[in-house]
Length: 214
Image (tube, rainbow, N blue to C red; front, side, top):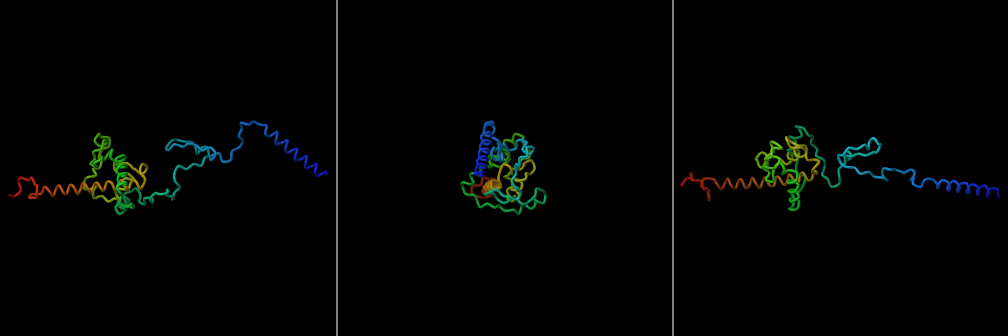
């Protein structure tokens, strides 16, 4: 009987403490477990922040050695003279683009590249003709037509001359897509130029050369 009274007294005391404790400020939510997950913060890319000072473990870059799902393997060559020379041996990892992907590659070129190189790739983009960016590469010239795709990718990835890096604007896959687009139009232009040259040779059918032998 005595034990029952002690137990009953204990239960009553616990109940009184609980009731009194619940009568506090109801607007105070108390302690929050893992507040960083309960209250996520909006983060704007490239904007200054003080997350580190607030002891919030935020890392704005991918973990070293990891690859984003669906992305190509990292480009292995460094941004130096040796890497540039070795880039000639890098092969395009993408299969030939179909018409839909080639259309998307053209869209990416016009957004990111045509402003300098021009839609026709002849260095007649508005920034080039307006004098904003000097010495823009004319991609229709033989030296660029013959340039290996790996060297083009290296230049687009790290930048070359007056052209900056486009690694932040275009994914690795998109950069290779743009290069396929450039190469397709370079080869088409080279073929057209060759056909025009052949048709104007002396004595060729349709030649208007007045000095051809009669």
